[in-house]
Amino acid sequence: MIQMLHVHKTYSNGQKALIDVSLKLDKGEFVYIIGPCGAGKTSILKLIYCAQRPTKGMVLFGDKNVARIRKSRIPYLRRNIGIVFQDFKLIKTRTVFENVALALEVIGATITDIQKKVWKTLSFVGLYNKSNEYPIRLSGGEQQRVAIARAMVNNPLILLADEPTGNLDPEMTVDIIDLLDKINIRGTTVLVATHNPDLAKNKRKVFTLEKGRITNG
Image 1 (cartoon, rainbow, N blue to C red):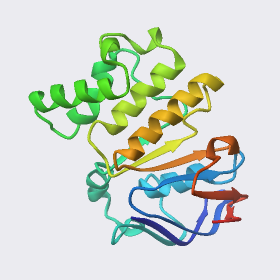
Image 2: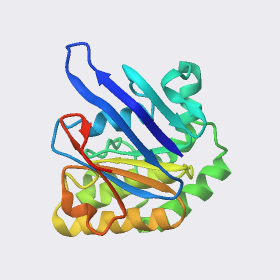
Image 3: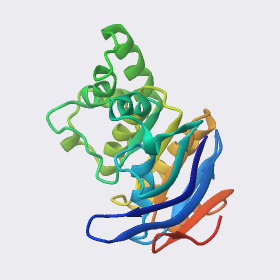
């Protein structure tokens, strides 16, 4: 589904974020990228959803080399990708329902479709009764569930999660990982980048990243 082939990423200041990275994610897998802060985890995710371009190498989404995709096609590619961030990135002035609905509004979904999909997704993540609340009134775990609902409401092929439990306590961390497992069981490919190796216990595929290089996998 996704492949990186001998990918290098060097920033304008000369920093080498990724060095000869090759990895593969098959459809339906749950994959972890483990590494300390600054190892290059976020750079890998940004290359997949085209927030950045590689300096060298290929990034394949299916049979398309997204490293060379035209800018005008990037929004269409991203309809197949859900993204979850450590800091949630919720809009404080919008309710839970409105935050999730935004992902459908930007692609021109009908009001009927938005209503149906948002309610279904909020039910799935356990926030059906919080639809009219604002993010400030939610716990950290609940805010991350809203962010996951927003990422999943359009049924993407893959979910990318960048340190999704970084701001959560241990109990909430377990809840979020359990939710990601449920999403994966439904058929969505899940890629989680984290500095916490304990999250990846008992997972079949784990890539370890150190100073921009894959050291296993």
